[in-house]
Image (tube, rainbow, N blue to C red; front, side, top):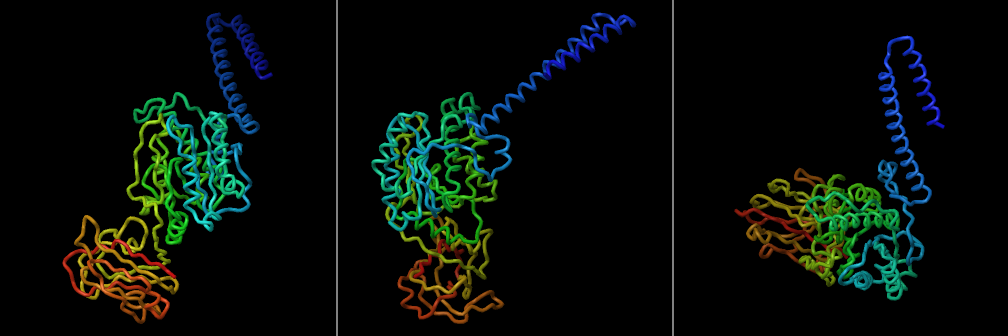
Amino acid sequence: MFKFHQMKHIFELLDKMRCLRKRSAVSFLGVLVIFLLFMNLYIEDSYVLEGDKQLIRETSTHQVNSERYVHTFKDLSNFSGAINVTYRYLAATPLQRKRYLTIGLSSVKRKKGNYLLETIKSIFEQSSYEELKEISVVVHLADFNSSWRETMVQDITQKFAHHIIAGRLMVIHAPEEYYPILDGLKRNYNDPEDRVKFRSKQNVDYAFLLNFCANTSDYYVMLEDDVRCSKNFLTAIKKVITSLEGTYWVTLEFSKLGYIGKLYHSHDLPRLAHFLLMFYQEMPCDWLLTHFRGLLAQKNVIRFKPSLFQHMGYYSSYKGTENKLKDDDFEEESFDIPDNPPASLYTNMNVFENYEASKAYSSVDEYFWGKPPSTGDVFVIVFENPIIISKIKVTTGTEDRQNDILHHGALDVGEKVIPSKKGIQCVTYLKLGEFKNGNFEMSDVNQKVPFDIHCMRIYVTKTQKEWLIIRSISIWTS
């Protein structure tokens, strides 16, 4: 109808031009030029209209049938909203309640090796019965090969049927029609075309996995499908999260490799999913994660040692090439992570640059660094609430600065907090012992101290020429 009226309007104008030509000296050539200009405008306008109609058709099809790329302009303007994907549930029972931690895995068919079953097995075997109540595992079988998916689902359901029934394990798939274009993408970093396609699809695989897991738990950790877990990794993660209570963080890292052991608040998952989709063809996922963290104002990496997850695959999922990467900070056996209850830290020592007191109390690989301390200088920890301590361990110096230790000092604990000119202090202190070779460690503290502890104090007993690094302060509570 629109075209008909537009053509009618053009011919009416031409008619008037012909009359005008008779009454004036306008040449036929001029009429022809004007006619062609109008036709050109019509063609261009029609092209634009057809483009708009195509966009409308695609958007409409996306909304109704979900047959096209799901990332519409509406999605881009609402980073907190879920992406509209209809997932296929390959093996799952409905979640009865929200868990503490969701563990996400995305897997595709490999040319060599298959480590997915071993990874799932490690997650469950390295968790206690109580820990299993607080976790859910979501596996995204992201390969478009339906035969491979069916085989994997059969293997998973045979080996882990009781975990599926208990609602701890879900296997899903995002259909191929939801994926954006994966051919002819930009070849950043001189990557070959097949490499660009592989890493771009991987970004989308992860985005759809994150999108699915957004409301299943309080926290989310991403693993790859060829990972071995440390014993009681959930308990270790919970302790770290508790120790960071009241501080701002976006990503916590429990492995230094790839997209392994990266922990997020679940409320950040929709934004991260959108982010990966927006820049899916730009760079690998682990590079994108660094930008995501920075955009949300976490400037520095927050990584914990020892690592809780280890890469065990020998062959890469890309072309089956060898991949011997190992995390040398990984410890498989159960290790004793300190509780480090919430506290404030004070010191009258001369602090160097930004190596402030709080960094000695964090599980992160950071430390306090001060200029040479004098007799009577103190480093004080004041706990938010009185605690019963079972074990204390303080380490000074580092491998590359082995002389920046506390050469002469003692450790005290105190009770009854009061404010003073020197900051918040305890009224009375009880000396527990001296530092030896820059370190202090004591077990069964609760059997030696007859009161609940409000403060802990490192006391310099002799001036030293060397600077002082307090690398870590670890406290275990009863």
